Length: 435
Ligand SMILES: [Zn+2]
Image 1 (tube, rainbow, N blue to C red):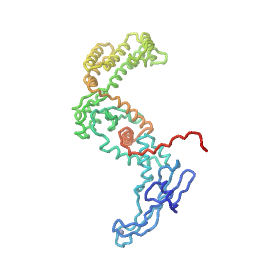
Image 2 (cartoon, rainbow, N blue to C red):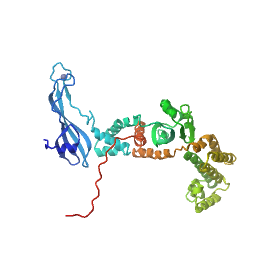
Image 3 (cartoon, helix red, strand yellow):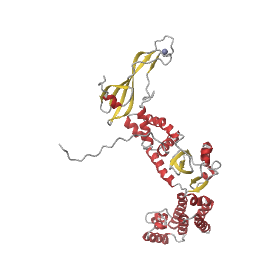
Image 4 (cartoon, rainbow, N blue to C red):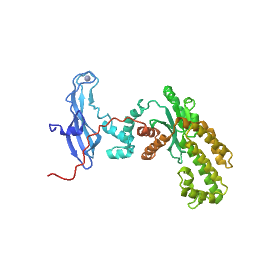
């Protein structure tokens, strides 16, 4: 059957196989193959085996010139001639096709890479290759798990970020389920994902981590969540805690929003509508004053004059700005002075929401100021949250936590994917012809 020069085998690229036939169907190319093995020895007694019969196994392989490919492997079955040998018959195996698998090994590895590295939907690959969703997902688990579990994936971590993301939105059966991401703030990779966002969830993870590895961590950046502060204890008590600037500013913004909604409701008796003065300036209120131009700040002040008769919202806005000012300070001493001023001003405010903001700031004082010493922030974490969300979106809602964790780590966990050599580039030809 062979063409004598191995053209088909070169195209197939599976060492140890011979191509018997290639048939092009409507939707796929069927390549019939057999191994080049001419003889075999019994694995049990070592006697030379004798051919028994053949069986056909169909597996999916990588697409062939843009068409789905089906390998039809005519497997040999061997028989041991020794009457006392327990081996009797067996079928041949290949490193390229795992037993009971629908995908060749190389197709499984590629599917894992597409789903992991490129965050592509499992269903898309299943359609493309012509296999079931589970076949692809199993390949992702099989080839992806060793990459995620590789002890070299996470080296020494000095700055750890802890941040929550939502895993499953609330529905009739359960409230929103959260996940906690652990991030290496220097390398910008997700170290692990923990199900849940409680102190106990975080503590369970640190309890299982290598104490030597934990000892290498010097800084931990979190949002202003008491659960995280509690969860870092006792295993990370030796670290410097930093409140992430992004989240500190967000607490100020949330205060502004709360007061705006309440004042809106009290003055007009309904929730914000398009033409309401406070609703119209809701975004300006959250913009940093240094980024407001004259027109913007005029509009904002006008909106406040009309919609905020008791200057409650103005007070909240000033408090929010005083929080932002802490981060504009150049040195730790100035930052401390500004933060203390902000706390005192908030405590003296008439508005309950602002006083509560002051309490939060006071409670997190040392963590907030630690940012100025360490420079640590979850800035990179927020970028990684986008990656996490991307994985989530393409999964169209996960049901399995383990699958979710695996896919997030494959995508954003600093995986070293097997190197793929780049072919030399074929350059664009100029349009003229010299014929
Ligand atoms: Zn034998």
